Image (tube, rainbow, N blue to C red; front, side):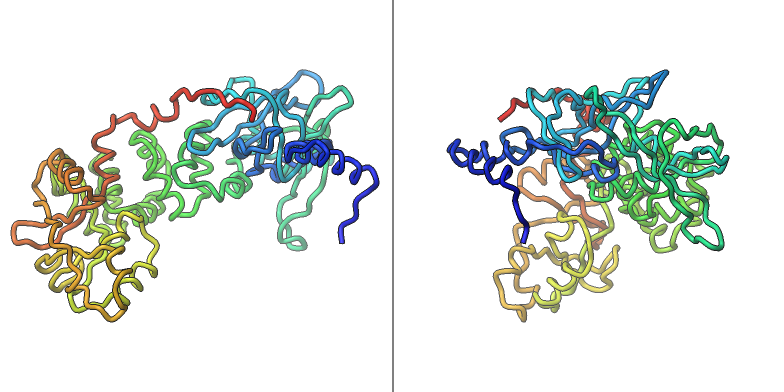
Length: 447
């Protein structure tokens, strides 16, 4: 059982006498550590003094000085539903490895890094340094320390030596900032620590994070992401950044990433590349994935065919509710796709046999598992032709409150579906992702 000192019991008792939970919270945050490792801070919650969560730590920002270790100037904070903001170190009242407490008015203006500033996780971890014994090592973590004068500075570097036969992972050591010299090396900077710290980020948030990194560092991170994770992130990037990243990959790796992208997103990206590059990548892709992409490239970009994806859950009318729910749960797919099952005659790969109708996920939940899907078809949902102008597809979705619509060809075969997010991408300005990162949000007052 955890024990409390007389002092802590007295403090908590005094908090209860305050008559508010806020008093209890303030007593628990009164003590702060004076040394903490940055990798442990990544993802830590930031609260105000009333106990309300402001956001999560994404990085620590420091500035170099002529003499002494770099000084911590603040934190880059991920605010839910907004973007990355800057929280100055002067606002911090307590730092723990599990949480940070801030006070005062928090300005949620979008964070913009200055040339004199450096991100510890984004730009320092993974760098190669030379220590006193002349051995080159890699920075795996960095501690920040509170000095007697009240400044937070970089304290120690947690280093790992290169792998050897005796030590498969390489030996580790701790050195002070002044005992190491950062190498100006042509070797790429390891992004392993950065990727680990951002592992819980959604694809769209990781895409925004990459855009804020220096170009070289962005490519280093992309090189170390898994094919599937990079594909998800690529789908959330503006076209020019997509082209830049895919062009920096080896052709075989680029083709693997395209295999993991949604066919419509992969087709849009390939259509933006030089013809010789797109031909090469299509030849290197998985034949089935490449066939879907080639099919989508045949359609006008401003038509249903140009908007649609070939990823759809297609079953026969004799399939049961149990089979439909099993298919939905078995494969990880977008909610807009998983919400509807498309019923057709065989074959059941696009282009399918003649399209019959759709069955909604919610409808299936209301019927016994043995119910035939053919008996649950929504007769009010009609398909659009593959040649239908994109503007008409948008009107169709809005008029009937749909999140997706089936797309058929002239002989009524299902060739794909258009989802609401594809239409939003069409209707929003081309630079909407950039505009979203630059929106000005009102300041957050302390609770």
